[in-house]
Image 1 (cartoon, rainbow, N blue to C red):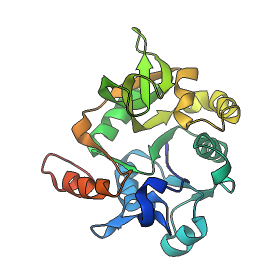
Image 2 (image 1 turned 90 degrees about the vertical axis):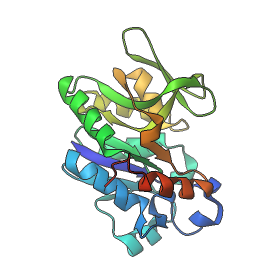
Image 3 (image 1 turned 45 degrees about the vertical axis):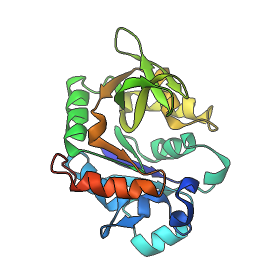
Length: 226
């Protein structure tokens, strides 16, 4: 399995913090989000790629990330184009991580264990339990198959998941047809199961105030994060 971090966007809601670099390369407590994410993925993957777009020249010069994939037209599309770029570049199962989230390493362990138990036949998508309509959400049917994603009432998308190599070709075709959509649109259109994780084991950096929240989350004795 390969890891891939999707970090092509500008991150406008972070204000001046992302004037020079995307959110994944914001530094706090001496490390970038990217560095922490790469550490989280390392025990579960054979290597980690990152999809870049916004200020990719600065990122490449300043941070020299592993296996960068540059999406040249990042500002013309939504992040479906980022995952499409990664799928075209990598012929393998992909453990996908949004460039602005951190998750407890135990949840990534649960994700890969469930994927192995399913023998790679299904995709998996991380979700936070509890119906809500403020963030993008996932819904599934009684048999546990994902049926819908978007700005809908459902369980919050947690920003990570696995796209199986078994469904790579189908995912490429779906994403090609939905470049103006968010990449999790692939989950209802290919066989996918949810993985529910506690909201306390997940943090997302969308706004400047989230940096303090992330610091507190990392400092918690209940959290395990590389």
